[in-house]
Each structure stands twice: as structure tokens, then as C-alpha cells.
Image (cartoon, rainbow, N blue to C red; front, top):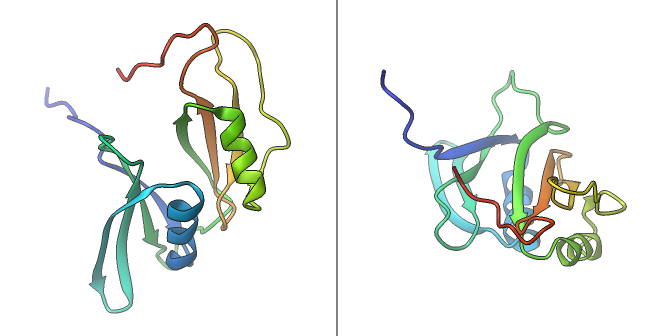
Length: 137
């Protein structure tokens, strides 16, 4: 059996690539990895966390048949300071849950927020409740 090697990108179809790029880089602090024109008026944009992370988020132009905005993306971003990140997003005017959820071990503190098009992303504390760092498998 041939196996998948890794996940390269996850794709979020967006109506306004410039607004999405501004949010993901200036509010979330992601780094622009790729911004390449591929058809007249269309661009392939990828952003990702600073550093070694190989998986990116593609802010792709939506096709005519794609539903844009208001999607539960399934994306989880990990942060070192969940409360600080929550406060930072609130201060930036981001649509964010009112509070950080604390369900207890083994679930790390977490909350959900929405990008400018209403796509939902989860943020979670990277270091677990008992100081155990979440590991990539």
C-alpha cells in the first residue's frame, strides 16, 4: 500500500483574498509563504506559522460552485499562551468566543474564533493541562 507522506496544506475558499491575507498575517501572525498568480485575476496564497511548520493554510479563490464563508474548517492552531492569544484576538476586533473553555484533563484549554468571512478555527493551548506538550504523531 502506498501511504500519504504528510499534509501539505489545508484550503479555505475565500471571496476576498486581500482581506483574508491581512487577517491571517497581521492578526494571527502567520507568515506569507506563497502568493502566486495562476490565472488572470486569481492568486494562490499560502500562509503558515513562523518557523518549521510544514503545513500551510491556502487562502484560495472560491470557485463559482463553492460555498464561501461560515465554514467549520476543522483547523486547530496551537499557542503557548491561550489566554493571551484570546485577549489579543478580542482587542483586534476578531469574532471570538467570549471565554476560553477549560474542560479539564486531557482536553487542553481552547476556544473558537472566526476569520473575516466567518470561517471557524479552533485555538488550543499547546502545553497540556498537566504540563505535557502535545506531540505530532
